[in-house]
Image 1 (cartoon, rainbow, N blue to C red):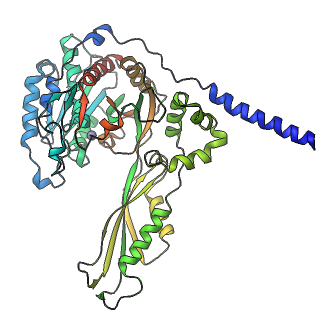
Image 2 (tube, rainbow, N blue to C red):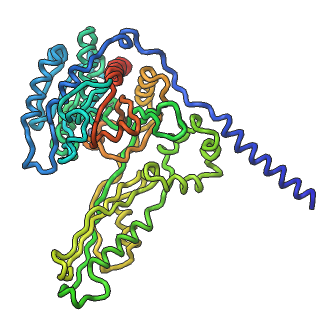
Length: 483
Ligand SMILES: [Zn+2]
């Protein structure tokens, strides 16, 4: 008996030693990168043009009837005078009325072109919240080391930093070997159906294939992951799909003084509650697993034990992480009931109750799979279920040489950052470019803390002035590295 107990103790000690050993010897993720080119490192990029671009209220409104075209056209005109070297060297086309496509022809036509993209439009400032801004949202003010305004993070820092980089490179006499496209849509915040769709069509007609494309997406995240001091460069390699599922319940109407036990609204509510209580299963997809694999060595020892030993902890870890709103969204197809309607008056029984539930679809799940899940979970044939949507984007290869170029450039400009592949839970314009390349990356070379990140689509949107200059250097170095 004592021998068995001793045996169990030894075995336990061994398991603990293995778990702890694996956690202790996790090697940090490293990328081989030389310092940036000396002229790139010492190039000075001011924020004047960035700040000026913010003063054009290029707003995307939900209702196209209230669209104001003037600021877009004024921004186009201003860009021509603000970036003279670029406009002297690249061809510029206005596409779909308000989007811009620039082409910088490469010297070697056998190389596939690269494409840098962004968007010119911004979301409106929520009426009634203007006074919460420390600096006017369309004032383009520089104060306290920040550039303030709607569109700084999303997405004018990227657009203007790309233009700064190209203006500088042209001035240096740089000639790309690979053709470079710059594509700036005007309706990203509405889905890009006019701008990005048409831009992509033109690129498809002219080139058919791209080496890679880089759009907005992940950022250099500081303080986003608890216990991790190093900044994490989130490179979006896939984005979730989406489907709006319409639930409809029909009943005979009548006066509310003589109601049935469950009205159409009651039946609809029960269906929605069941969906909220029974989400689709959570799991670690390969991209998210790789993200955690690279971040794990930076985490406190307690976190490292489960992450270094997924073979033992996977189910427990998935369950724990799925409970967190932010991380959970990366582990499963999410369920969000967003709209409901019933009878138009208090004393009228609803004849039709409608609900809309938005699901953001994880790679591997499908719109049809979501509809099946909804029918099964609701389990009530009197609730009519229908909807159409799209699956997630294809997953970019994070071992590809093009990914390595992006990763290397990040480490050159942000030497302490850990670059990781990242699952985007929001959508970008990249879906219109599907089929042109597998190498679709979504990354803004902008530093964001949780506080700064809340400014995108929110209040007091701003970017550190120094970070803007570094973003311009990033794009200049990236263009050089990608030749
Ligand atoms: Zn954006």
